[in-house]
Amino acid sequence: MLVLSRKSSQNVVIDGTIIIKVVRVDRDVVKLGIEAPASISVHRQEVYEEIERCNRGAAQTGKRKPPRLAQSTTRPEPISEDRLAP
Amino acid sequence: MQRHQHQLPISTPARGTRRSTLAFPNGLFGFESARDLTLVQSDSEHPFGWLECKGEQGPSFLVVEPQDVGQAYQPEISREDAAALGLGGRDDTLVLAVVTHHDNGRLTLNLKSPIIINLKRGTGRQIIPRNVSAFTSQFPLEIHPE
Figure 1 (cartoon, chains in turn purple, green):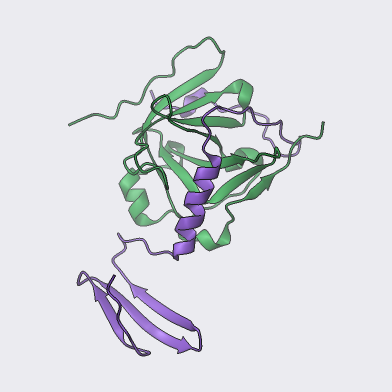
Figure 2: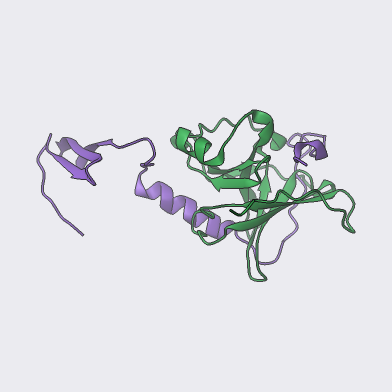
């Protein structure tokens, strides 16, 4: 891992296209600005971790039958077969 | 070039069951190698469906369309995700949320990373919408009181 020290308003450039700007340093909080091509998604690490954790928790090896939902919850019509393309 | 076959609904012993073969080039978050999935939808299980990963040990995911459980769910799909999926009109787009069936019987929806399927092409992707911070990964579904 490359470790760099930056002061407020100093930048880091990744792969010549992604710019990380140190916008502000305030005690123990660093405000970062990220400029990246639209093809690169940028999210807080916790978001990825939470989603992976959620998928892992949802993954089933046996298909456990889900309980019935409350009346107010479900829409009455089953999924129409026409929705699937021929 | 391999064509992604979008399978016709086939008749099975269970009435009103539809199986769709789907290609997920990026798999799912945490399951990146799960590239060949089958979406199984039975009228008897409505609104639930199953997204099955290929192989005996392949996990299955309980899924639901958020609109089928009364959710006015508007994830903002990034331009890149939309382009990767080749999304056209809304009629070709299926939005699914993964359901966690907790040990205590509770059901929660993951609205933070929906699964977007292009029905015409038979391809899908799990995405992080641009407005991800507006959603929770544990949205509770109300169970029918017994």
